[in-house]
Length: 104
Image 1 (cartoon, rainbow, N blue to C red):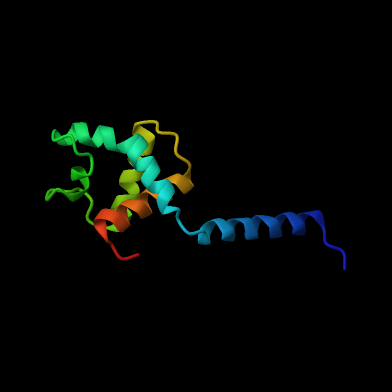
Image 2: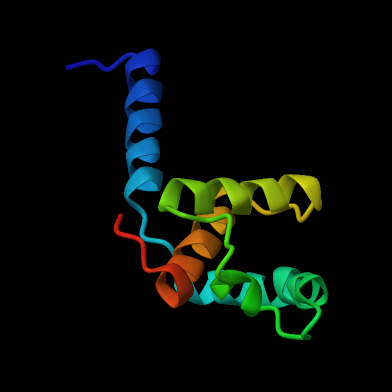
């Protein structure tokens, strides 16, 4: 059976996309990025020198997982952190596991 170049390309694209969609987030990478690119700014914003306090404050803007994802994406864009989508997913997963505990 002959497979055309188009069929082969389409198959590779679909399987590549599925692999990306089901890849588990890397929590260690998320923590590393948070510590390197987020913590200092958040520590300054809270005024207490503790960057983690921004995640646990009572007046948090983050009320659910979609909002957490959008806040991570917004920080990435606005602050030009140059994170890849996989990195954003890793940071989101780390913050959710460590602080927020939202159901997926």
